[in-house]
Image (cartoon, rainbow, N blue to C red; front, side):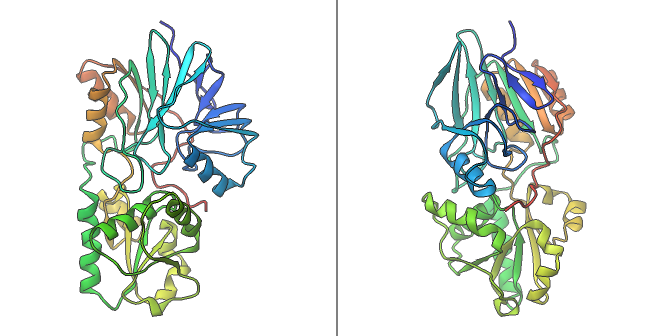
Length: 335
């Protein structure tokens, strides 16, 4: 049986519909799983995605980020010749989707980035059964087991009690992570105003426009030491930047699945590492592969070989795709 997908220099390609999925450079037709910059690039001829992903791309790249857009709501089937395309929640960030390509004889799912943990800022992951599952493997090693996000946020609240005279800077990606940290703080009972670096303002405002409750947030503006005892969110790269010096002697925290690795935390200048990830950990990667019922698994961007080995041990055909152009889950700050 011929595969629905092939691997090209631009990324995964379905010749039956003439479209790439998350291509790494501009193509004629693209299906985009979510708005992170390593998956959603500007310059395509046409883009198919959820409304929220299209909106996020417009915020990041401008209204004319591609030649033509087409919205496809979650669960709605779009017939393109012999292939039916549908999008299903991936639980990664707002608007994120898995792509299901279905024919009468086979079903292929491209996960994009996904997570199984509860997240109040996006639709939860939807399990989609399939024959071939293309999965990410950002945290595809057994050492990566993410604790509940609420437990990690409580570490931040404890630090605020211990060091009430210090600003707490939290490094968090502009899309998804920053908004999730805010929502988790609210869930933990933190009601004070939360301050934002300018790079986080537009996307946070967009989340709020979509009905995501984040409470009282405000731009930092030119303030510094007067924000003692407050929580300030910023892109991860700003923790070691001169911008952070305005706060005197702040407590530097960072929210990322990579904070499981102490050396990574030191490298990023995080004295308070918070293991909050928007990707599936090892257990959830393995669980998802099992639950899809896929007999064939393609593994991309991450610790591919370890997950391929696990699949083979469990009787599934598997191969690494060795794709380039995707980051490690710590997205560069674009906006």
